[in-house]
Image 1 (cartoon, rainbow, N blue to C red):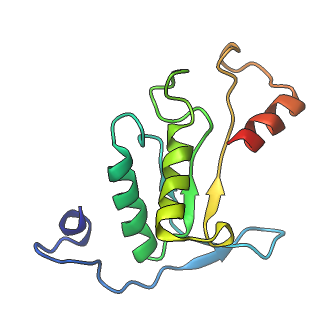
Image 2: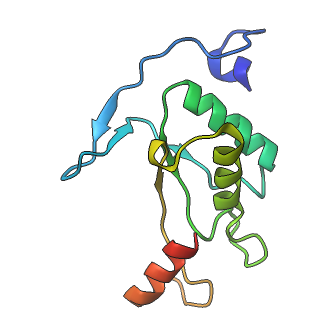
Length: 130
């Protein structure tokens, strides 16, 4: 993965990069201008793949990770939440503080029709569980 991302065969770590940081409007929260999407962690990619990708992104200055309580895709009740768990295991293994990693999420009711409105209380419960 390192050689693919860095474009140099045999590189043990990514080159020193300067990631542009931006503020989320109305907050003092700074996030990297690039966000790493994790929708495949737990289905198409293994937990080890997720950890490697997260570490590579972190080393490149990315502190912003996107997930959803229903990930990975394809969405299925049996795998729901595996992406969140992969992020949590990586954070624990690498001793990343919760305040250092910015995680964006979204929710979906697995029992609802597509595009159905979710009750606000249901959304908050799903976010807390994630």
